[in-house]
Length: 312
Image 1 (tube, helix red, strand yellow):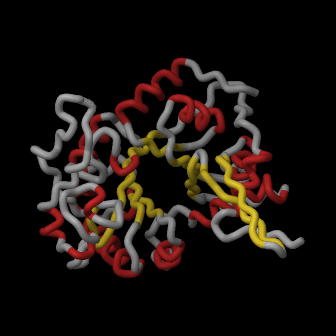
Image 2: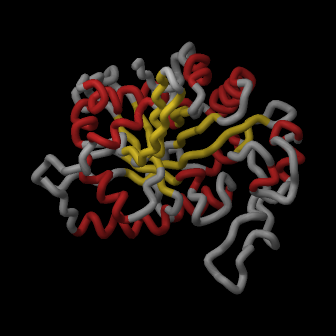
């Protein structure tokens, strides 16, 4: 019987062998920085200027923004494939000009914490902003992370580059995408600061548990992946397919130690939105975490600073 892993799901077997993370250091570990995911999607409408202001008010250590391209070639902030996911409008972002997108309420679907007023931004519309507007709002001392979302890749890369050139913001921005074509296009720009591709990060993190091989990245690499990752193992054999699903933990004490063999690596865990997950990331020694609520996670970090108990 011949078995092989399907593309994109090779990591599942790691869930069987990666133990719960243990903190290898006796002293209090450095607490991971808080990066406001989509500018803090749980505190205000995601990727809006209101969310950016809230993230800054809660002293986020960085701001992560989702970028797409408007019909007239402007880099704008929006994540889903269709406007209907978050707004009262329909259609792809690329079907509207930047001026039209600015008049669409990106806060329409945001639910507030007050049961008596569950839709706080329906009466206070938040238009879809441009990347340039966002960068002008953010203090240059606050790092910005751009998640490039829309295809084809080349027009979006060109639009983002025009903004970064105009704002002289290359040194404060780091670029990410789940599609490796963006990294390939940006690799030719000397000033571009990149995360390595998601595919490569996934392979590195699971090479150790799957094949007992440590594959550290080059010096200075930035790596990002979820703290926990739902994956599927597919086995191909003569009579058909066998599939098993797992809740994998790509970040483990062993995989972090392997990555740390390279100097100046930066390890970022995505989807860290609870006190337990934050403590886990801290005990693993990760550099930063993506959080949906900077307001809440700021309190979690403060509690961890008063005393973090990691298992040896």
